[in-house]
Length: 501
Image (cartoon, one colour):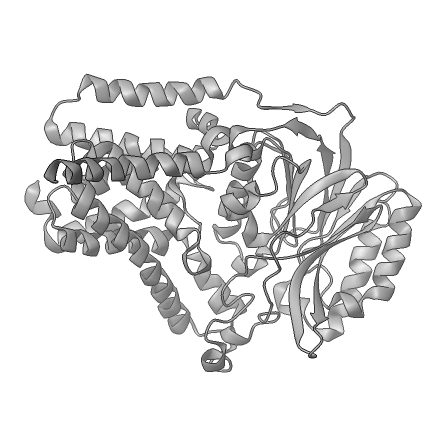
């Protein structure tokens, strides 16, 4: 077996190990494959030098992102109008670039951690989690395809309200490491089995704890308009009035029946400043029935020097109030890195609304009557720490999105699963409104109570309950888990340095 993991055979196996993460997540939900991925990776790294591990880690990342973010091809080719060969090449470059994260992570694992006493087990799990965390913020971050997301419906879900997605991922990686270590040693050590059993049983028991409780008030009625306007016509000027008419007519019967009516990201395809007459009409209609309208719409502002800043925004009307500008922007989708060099090269670099500025930190929440909503636009909901900053003050979470960019790929369903994890971590209901699906109401346990379908014009209606109290994660975020991971890695190094001195 040793020859199997040498050279290119080992690299191809590493790609396979990375690719196994994708079917462990939505929409496939074959969660044991995520554990198999980490087990195979531990074995493939067991006798390499640090330099060799860097190369193998890159192949693992190529498999991970090549399979898991294949939806990037859809955005570039179908909606960015790039020819198929060029779109495939750019998708490959994207995956290869992200592979640098796993390359550095597993270089560090072999160079400083693997050969410590607990290195192949606790050390591997710790560096795996730190690698995911590092990817969440470096160069704006890409916190996608975390290995813990596949466990939204397993016993490990109990760890999410305690330590967030990183706590779940730590147990998954450690489980794979213990399996790999036992198979390599041809014997399973009892204390290792007990450790994994305790963590899985602990997650099961934690699932029975109600960290948050319903507030002493009736549930609210929510309606989300999924207009399903094709992406290729959404920003055409000759379709603007038709778009407004669709939202107006679809919402006409909703004001009297619902406390909150939600329109998705960029529902109104122009700037707020140009849509004030229409929004004034909708404001009056919502106020007439004591309802709140929350919608996505671009906006802009000018500074004293005449510089204009454009934002991807959420605004509230009627009984609602507030204006939130998106903080975490999607590269190429909402802004173009190296803009002076790339603008005009191909149509993909000139997509509509790809010149936004990032909103400021410390913005106020959105109010819907007396309910405080923590707002997130599309991609922002995948950032655990960004979400935790609004907790536990927020009564509910709201995220609006436009997943039409990814067509019928697995991307929108992965996105929905990540939103479920944010609800579970926070112990709060989450309202998810999208233009083309999947819109959903998610309860405080991360369970979908009602959802729409993709590429359908419909109204998703349901009840949402305000919850009070706080999960441990909402009070401290990911830092306790990350602190534990850094301690696992650094303490043996400090002890060794002290002994040498």
